[in-house]
Image (tube, rainbow, N blue to C red):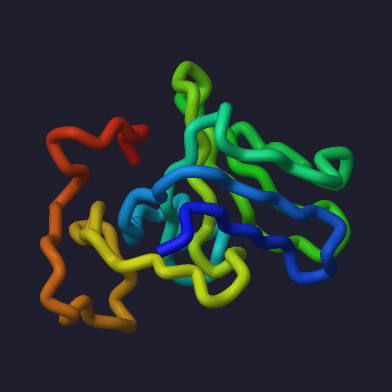
Length: 139
């Protein structure tokens, strides 16, 4: 699989290109992700050095906690990024990548906070909060 990927927001005001392998998709069911996206987050990670963003002036950053901020297109509202304040990577929403993305699901986190209107039954590992190795904000 090619290790170069591209993607954008819905209106195209924000475009990005990544280099290098992408982490498997982690599905986050925490209340913040659900409230922002209307469902749950599906995101991969990219090292800061391995992503180039065009149209960054069209990104609005919302500081959702003291741990991280969330980036979305200020024109069309597309949810694009989740950026921890003290780490050199950015989570990129899986649905914003151009197809074929080659992305595969890895696990579900914060399933203890998932919405009551759906079930998680795809066979991927599930964690009540986070995985032992994944640094995320406490809900």
